[in-house]
Length: 83
Image (tube, rainbow, N blue to C red):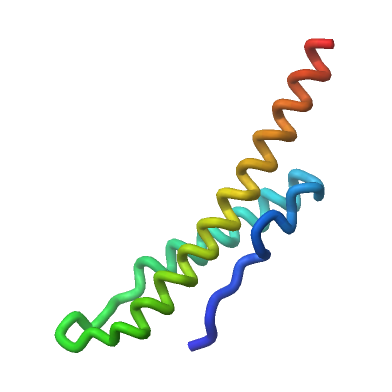
């Protein structure tokens, strides 16, 4: 199975919010699928579990980064409205 990848940490912060939303939804779906995959617990493959956890962490970091960018964008919009 190929290693899932994210769009990278912060790669979408300056782009249009709609494209951030689409990318964010895709990464959340990928993270959910990665975390919900069945694992044969009778014979755990530690290296495979570690690889999956690292992939999930990378995706989660990218999602968090894009959410921070969206929140910053909303703060800027709010500041402009108050001015």
